[in-house]
Length: 542
Ligand code: ADP
Image 1 (cartoon, helix red, strand yellow):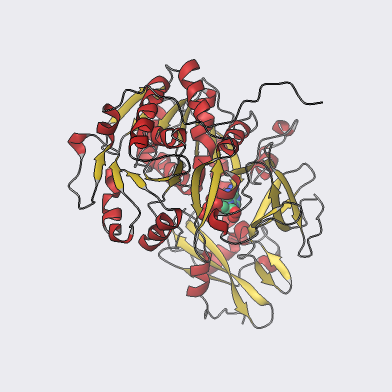
Image 2 (cartoon, rainbow, N blue to C red):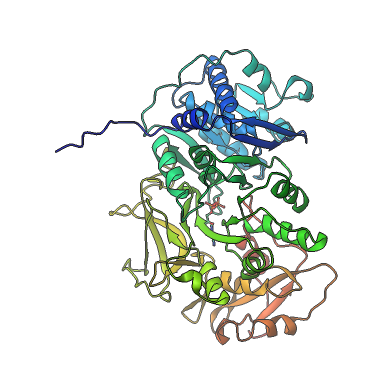
């Protein structure tokens, strides 16, 4: 027997329709790229997105056409996502932190027809426009008064495009499995690969990620998505926010401690989300100024592992609940969140932190397992670590244009490239990227765990651990450290700090002090570059 419910396609425009109709008065606050604070609401955002969809159609955007955006989190970027997807197009978010040649590659590979950009990114595109033959127009996300002088050809003014339309149109009818979003993974090896989101996957992920044990944002919440819309689908918040009808606070270009603190307090933000580096800057600012976080209830941290000291500072010093999250672009992007199960609230502080440093439990719509090298499932005992595999309706089944070939096994599992454990209660913990684990005497050492302990040392600002060739053990860990300004601890002092916190044979064989640790465009430590840099490093034990 078939179900007799209405067949209602899960499409992205239905999300903004819902927000406009039932939360039309709810605010969106933006720190604009120009600097001023701008206020609008879902009703206005809806109307302007429809006008922009009309304008985009006039510019030739139809079903399946790719439109790039190179922009910060602002009301205009939000409108652009809904307008592009609502016009049947595919919104391709470009990461301004990529190298010029990577941008050229992905803009051409994706066949972007139009690019919408913030005025702050004009110079980036000016320098590469001759290499972008397919781009017919550049739309500057600003008004006439702020249009910059530019050598970009075919520039259009965003506010003028909107002003010329009446908003009297329907969204372009689409199938829920049609493409609507495109985001390239940074591709530490080989070219970046395009992850293509569908209307259905975005709606399912938006619903799943905002469950009570997930981001848990309600209509009464004021949510600050610092995680950029130009990376990893903004963790689903651009969809989850309007679904819930919460106030969204868009931080624009200024993500330093002072500006983030000002928004958190001034806009009474209750829920926020970002990578650890952003929180490092905020915590340093709070310590320096003595400011507090009176309204903030929950902070979602992911993208890299949360160092325990960061977790403890938020929870103990500022009374803010940390929810550790793990995911990747291919997962829309959230896979797990570390919310407590029944009874865990009553554990001691240390025991609770032991749980929260783990990356957490899968949200509904994500299936997950760990396997050994032969593909055999490993037990959920919190000890056995192996390859982390996932599958589900908001997880990539292939990359754009078949790059990378077949990416699923016969049972539909996608290998995340991460190595992890899963414990008895289903909490997953990332040990490493498979290519970063340190293989010492046939056993694996987790670089992430040592790094996160090392940054607990008050004089260590940032730490990276890599494997360096060793004649007897194959590889041994080298701890690379950036010191806090004005401090001079010795190698021995830093190693002594780790003693007792990790197994003896995990102890780094040496400490190298550097001025800077290289990062990828998405803020992750560039282990590959470090490994090259220290390729010929002589360990004292070698
Ligand atoms: P990119 O690879 O383009 O930087 P992704 O955001 O897709 O972008 O990166 C996903 C990877 O980031 C994961 O496979 C994992 O290695 C790492 N990662 C994400 N969240 C966490 C976390 N909470 N702890 C440890 N690693 C994480």
